[in-house]
Image (cartoon, rainbow, N blue to C red; front, top):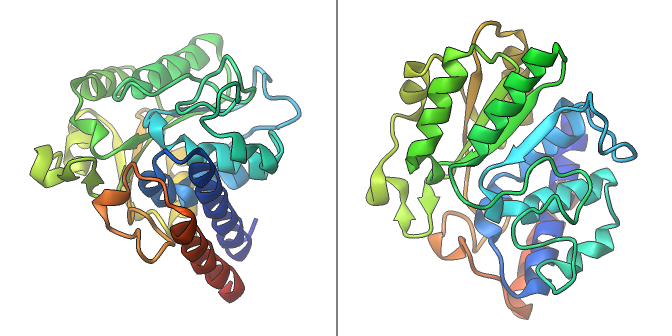
Amino acid sequence: MNTSELKKTANEVRKGILTAVHAAKSGHPGGSLSAADIYTYLYFEEMNINPEKPDDPDRDRFVLSKGHTCPGLYSVMAEKGFFPKEELKTFRHVGSRLQGHPSMRYLPGLDMSSGSLGQGISVAAGMALSAKIQKKDYRTYTLLGDGEIQEGEVWEASMFAGAKKLDNLVVIVDNNNLQIDGTVEEVNSPYPIDKKFEAFNFHVINVDGHDFDALRAAFDEARQTKGMPTAIICKTTKGKGVSFMENQVSWHGTAPNDEQFETAMQDLERIGESL
Protein backbone atom coordinates (compact mmCIF):
# COMPACT_ATOMS: atom_id res chain seq x y z
CA MET A 1 0.00 0.00 0.00
CA ASN A 2 1.10 3.56 -0.60
CA THR A 3 0.94 6.18 2.14
CA SER A 4 -2.45 7.51 1.04
CA GLU A 5 -4.00 4.04 1.11
CA LEU A 6 -2.51 3.35 4.54
CA LYS A 7 -4.01 6.58 5.91
CA LYS A 8 -7.44 5.68 4.56
CA THR A 9 -7.19 2.17 5.98
CA ALA A 10 -6.11 3.48 9.39
CA ASN A 11 -9.12 5.80 9.41
CA GLU A 12 -11.39 2.80 8.80
CA VAL A 13 -9.61 0.96 11.61
CA ARG A 14 -10.40 3.87 13.92
CA LYS A 15 -14.08 3.68 12.94
CA GLY A 16 -14.03 -0.01 13.82
CA ILE A 17 -12.49 0.74 17.21
CA LEU A 18 -15.28 3.17 18.07
CA THR A 19 -17.94 0.80 16.74
CA ALA A 20 -16.69 -2.02 18.94
CA VAL A 21 -16.28 -0.01 22.14
CA HIS A 22 -19.60 1.78 21.70
CA ALA A 23 -21.42 -1.51 21.10
CA ALA A 24 -19.85 -3.01 24.23
CA LYS A 25 -20.47 0.11 26.31
CA SER A 26 -17.01 -0.56 27.74
CA GLY A 27 -13.42 -0.87 26.61
CA HIS A 28 -10.31 1.19 25.97
CA PRO A 29 -10.58 3.60 23.04
CA GLY A 30 -7.71 6.01 23.86
CA GLY A 31 -4.77 3.65 23.48
CA SER A 32 -6.45 1.76 20.64
CA LEU A 33 -6.77 4.97 18.61
CA SER A 34 -3.18 6.03 19.37
CA ALA A 35 -1.90 2.72 18.01
CA ALA A 36 -4.22 2.50 14.98
CA ASP A 37 -1.55 3.63 12.52
CA ILE A 38 0.92 1.13 13.99
CA TYR A 39 -1.60 -1.70 13.71
CA THR A 40 -2.38 -0.68 10.14
CA TYR A 41 1.25 -0.59 9.04
CA LEU A 42 1.98 -3.96 10.64
CA TYR A 43 -1.02 -5.78 9.19
CA PHE A 44 -1.15 -4.19 5.74
CA GLU A 45 2.49 -3.60 4.96
CA GLU A 46 5.03 -5.15 7.31
CA MET A 47 3.97 -8.60 8.43
CA ASN A 48 3.90 -11.79 6.38
CA ILE A 49 0.39 -13.00 7.24
CA ASN A 50 -2.56 -14.50 5.38
CA PRO A 51 -6.12 -14.42 6.79
CA GLU A 52 -6.88 -17.60 4.85
CA LYS A 53 -3.99 -19.43 6.54
CA PRO A 54 -3.88 -18.01 10.08
CA ASP A 55 -1.90 -21.00 11.39
CA ASP A 56 0.79 -20.97 8.71
CA PRO A 57 3.95 -22.05 10.58
CA ASP A 58 6.03 -19.61 8.53
CA ARG A 59 3.86 -16.56 9.28
CA ASP A 60 5.19 -13.57 11.17
CA ARG A 61 4.03 -13.39 14.80
CA PHE A 62 2.36 -10.49 16.60
CA VAL A 63 1.93 -10.26 20.36
CA LEU A 64 -0.28 -7.48 21.70
CA SER A 65 1.28 -6.98 25.09
CA LYS A 66 -1.04 -4.10 26.04
CA GLY A 67 -4.01 -6.41 25.57
CA HIS A 68 -6.66 -3.91 26.68
CA THR A 69 -6.21 -2.09 23.36
CA CYS A 70 -7.52 -5.12 21.48
CA PRO A 71 -10.31 -3.02 19.88
CA GLY A 72 -7.52 -1.75 17.62
CA LEU A 73 -6.22 -5.25 16.95
CA TYR A 74 -9.69 -6.65 16.26
CA SER A 75 -10.52 -3.74 13.97
CA VAL A 76 -7.39 -4.13 11.86
CA MET A 77 -7.89 -7.91 11.70
CA ALA A 78 -11.46 -7.38 10.47
CA GLU A 79 -10.22 -4.85 7.92
CA LYS A 80 -7.61 -7.39 6.76
CA GLY A 81 -10.27 -10.10 6.36
CA PHE A 82 -9.74 -12.40 9.34
CA PHE A 83 -13.44 -12.10 10.20
CA PRO A 84 -16.46 -9.98 9.11
CA LYS A 85 -16.40 -6.34 10.22
CA GLU A 86 -19.98 -6.70 11.42
CA GLU A 87 -18.64 -8.95 14.19
CA LEU A 88 -16.94 -5.93 15.82
CA LYS A 89 -20.34 -5.07 17.28
CA THR A 90 -20.15 -8.24 19.42
CA PHE A 91 -17.05 -6.99 21.28
CA ARG A 92 -17.12 -7.96 24.97
CA HIS A 93 -20.51 -9.66 24.60
CA VAL A 94 -21.17 -13.06 26.14
CA GLY A 95 -20.23 -15.78 23.65
CA SER A 96 -18.34 -13.42 21.33
CA ARG A 97 -14.98 -14.38 19.83
CA LEU A 98 -13.90 -10.80 20.55
CA GLN A 99 -13.22 -10.87 24.26
CA GLY A 100 -12.14 -7.85 26.32
CA HIS A 101 -8.57 -9.12 26.03
CA PRO A 102 -7.32 -11.23 23.10
CA SER A 103 -7.94 -14.96 23.49
CA MET A 104 -6.37 -17.51 21.14
CA ARG A 105 -8.98 -19.98 22.33
CA TYR A 106 -11.70 -18.20 20.39
CA LEU A 107 -10.23 -16.24 17.48
CA PRO A 108 -7.99 -17.64 14.72
CA GLY A 109 -5.16 -15.28 13.81
CA LEU A 110 -4.12 -14.44 17.36
CA ASP A 111 -0.64 -15.56 18.37
CA MET A 112 -0.98 -14.85 22.09
CA SER A 113 -3.71 -14.50 24.71
CA SER A 114 -2.75 -11.33 26.55
CA GLY A 115 -3.90 -8.77 29.06
CA SER A 116 -1.64 -9.11 32.11
CA LEU A 117 0.64 -6.18 31.41
CA GLY A 118 4.37 -6.72 31.01
CA GLN A 119 4.18 -10.31 29.83
CA GLY A 120 3.91 -9.93 26.07
CA ILE A 121 7.54 -9.08 25.44
CA SER A 122 8.64 -12.26 27.27
CA VAL A 123 6.46 -14.40 25.02
CA ALA A 124 7.60 -12.51 21.93
CA ALA A 125 11.24 -13.04 22.86
CA GLY A 126 10.54 -16.75 23.23
CA MET A 127 8.93 -16.86 19.80
CA ALA A 128 11.91 -15.07 18.29
CA LEU A 129 14.36 -17.48 19.95
CA SER A 130 12.27 -20.41 18.72
CA ALA A 131 12.62 -19.15 15.15
CA LYS A 132 16.40 -18.98 15.59
CA ILE A 133 16.57 -22.51 16.99
CA GLN A 134 14.40 -23.89 14.19
CA LYS A 135 16.25 -21.82 11.58
CA LYS A 136 12.98 -20.22 10.51
CA ASP A 137 12.72 -16.83 8.80
CA TYR A 138 9.59 -15.53 10.49
CA ARG A 139 9.81 -12.32 12.48
CA THR A 140 8.11 -11.46 15.78
CA TYR A 141 6.57 -8.12 16.69
CA THR A 142 5.17 -6.99 20.03
CA LEU A 143 3.35 -3.79 20.96
CA LEU A 144 3.76 -2.35 24.46
CA GLY A 145 2.28 0.68 26.16
CA ASP A 146 4.50 3.32 27.72
CA GLY A 147 2.75 2.82 31.07
CA GLU A 148 3.24 -0.90 30.69
CA ILE A 149 7.02 -0.59 30.54
CA GLN A 150 6.95 0.39 34.21
CA GLU A 151 6.65 -3.39 34.75
CA GLY A 152 9.88 -5.12 35.74
CA GLU A 153 9.31 -8.17 33.56
CA VAL A 154 9.65 -5.93 30.49
CA TRP A 155 13.28 -5.28 31.35
CA GLU A 156 14.08 -8.89 32.26
CA ALA A 157 12.81 -9.90 28.83
CA SER A 158 14.71 -7.04 27.20
CA MET A 159 17.94 -8.19 28.86
CA PHE A 160 17.28 -11.70 27.54
CA ALA A 161 16.48 -10.50 24.00
CA GLY A 162 19.60 -8.36 23.87
CA ALA A 163 21.80 -11.11 25.29
CA LYS A 164 20.49 -13.62 22.76
CA LYS A 165 20.92 -11.12 19.89
CA LEU A 166 17.36 -11.63 18.67
CA ASP A 167 17.51 -9.53 15.51
CA ASN A 168 14.22 -11.10 14.38
CA LEU A 169 12.38 -9.36 17.24
CA VAL A 170 10.85 -5.87 17.01
CA VAL A 171 9.52 -4.25 20.18
CA ILE A 172 7.17 -1.33 19.53
CA VAL A 173 6.30 1.14 22.30
CA ASP A 174 3.14 3.23 21.89
CA ASN A 175 4.39 6.35 23.65
CA ASN A 176 1.19 8.39 24.03
CA ASN A 177 2.36 9.61 27.46
CA LEU A 178 -0.93 8.81 29.23
CA GLN A 179 -1.95 5.84 31.35
CA ILE A 180 -5.02 5.18 33.47
CA ASP A 181 -3.92 7.41 36.39
CA GLY A 182 -2.43 10.32 34.44
CA THR A 183 0.77 11.08 32.55
CA VAL A 184 3.49 8.46 32.69
CA GLU A 185 5.81 10.98 34.40
CA GLU A 186 3.28 11.59 37.16
CA VAL A 187 2.76 7.88 37.80
CA ASN A 188 6.29 6.49 37.41
CA SER A 189 8.48 7.97 34.72
CA PRO A 190 9.98 5.48 32.25
CA TYR A 191 11.96 8.18 30.47
CA PRO A 192 14.33 8.17 28.66
CA ILE A 193 12.80 5.10 27.01
CA ASP A 194 15.29 4.95 24.15
CA LYS A 195 18.34 4.99 26.43
CA LYS A 196 16.90 2.18 28.56
CA PHE A 197 16.47 -0.12 25.57
CA GLU A 198 19.92 0.82 24.31
CA ALA A 199 21.32 -0.25 27.68
CA PHE A 200 19.85 -3.71 27.04
CA ASN A 201 21.62 -3.99 23.67
CA PHE A 202 18.71 -2.95 21.44
CA HIS A 203 18.95 -0.97 18.25
CA VAL A 204 16.56 1.92 18.95
CA ILE A 205 14.57 4.07 16.53
CA ASN A 206 12.44 7.05 17.59
CA VAL A 207 9.56 7.93 15.23
CA ASP A 208 6.29 9.78 14.91
CA GLY A 209 3.85 6.89 15.29
CA HIS A 210 1.29 8.61 13.04
CA ASP A 211 3.69 9.18 10.11
CA PHE A 212 3.53 6.24 7.71
CA ASP A 213 6.67 7.26 5.85
CA ALA A 214 8.55 7.35 9.16
CA LEU A 215 7.09 3.98 10.16
CA ARG A 216 8.13 2.49 6.82
CA ALA A 217 11.68 3.73 7.25
CA ALA A 218 11.82 2.44 10.83
CA PHE A 219 10.59 -1.07 10.04
CA ASP A 220 12.91 -1.24 7.02
CA GLU A 221 15.81 -0.24 9.26
CA ALA A 222 14.80 -2.92 11.76
CA ARG A 223 14.93 -5.57 9.01
CA GLN A 224 18.42 -4.47 8.09
CA THR A 225 19.68 -4.51 11.68
CA LYS A 226 21.66 -7.65 12.47
CA GLY A 227 22.94 -9.04 15.76
CA MET A 228 20.53 -7.18 18.05
CA PRO A 229 16.77 -6.71 18.53
CA THR A 230 15.12 -3.43 17.57
CA ALA A 231 12.90 -1.17 19.67
CA ILE A 232 10.77 1.35 17.80
CA ILE A 233 9.59 4.11 20.14
CA CYS A 234 6.48 5.65 18.56
CA LYS A 235 5.46 9.10 19.76
CA THR A 236 1.66 9.13 19.50
CA THR A 237 -1.46 10.99 20.59
CA LYS A 238 -3.91 9.19 22.86
CA GLY A 239 -7.36 9.20 21.27
CA LYS A 240 -5.90 10.19 17.88
CA GLY A 241 -8.48 11.20 15.27
CA VAL A 242 -11.34 12.05 17.63
CA SER A 243 -11.34 15.72 18.60
CA PHE A 244 -12.66 15.41 22.14
CA MET A 245 -10.64 12.29 22.97
CA GLU A 246 -7.19 13.46 21.92
CA ASN A 247 -4.72 13.76 24.83
CA GLN A 248 -7.50 13.21 27.38
CA VAL A 249 -6.63 10.61 30.01
CA SER A 250 -10.34 10.18 30.80
CA TRP A 251 -10.72 8.26 27.52
CA HIS A 252 -8.22 5.59 28.54
CA GLY A 253 -10.98 3.18 29.51
CA THR A 254 -14.32 4.91 28.86
CA ALA A 255 -16.82 4.05 26.13
CA PRO A 256 -18.61 6.84 24.24
CA ASN A 257 -22.34 7.23 24.71
CA ASP A 258 -24.62 7.48 21.65
CA GLU A 259 -24.15 11.22 21.18
CA GLN A 260 -20.38 11.04 21.65
CA PHE A 261 -20.20 8.09 19.26
CA GLU A 262 -21.98 10.09 16.54
CA THR A 263 -19.65 13.05 17.05
CA ALA A 264 -16.58 10.82 16.96
CA MET A 265 -17.71 9.07 13.77
CA GLN A 266 -18.36 12.46 12.16
CA ASP A 267 -14.79 13.47 13.02
CA LEU A 268 -13.48 10.38 11.28
CA GLU A 269 -15.79 10.86 8.29
CA ARG A 270 -14.35 14.35 7.83
CA ILE A 271 -10.82 12.98 8.05
CA GLY A 272 -11.71 10.29 5.50
CA GLU A 273 -13.10 12.87 3.08
CA SER A 274 -9.88 14.87 3.30
CA LEU A 275 -7.65 11.91 2.44
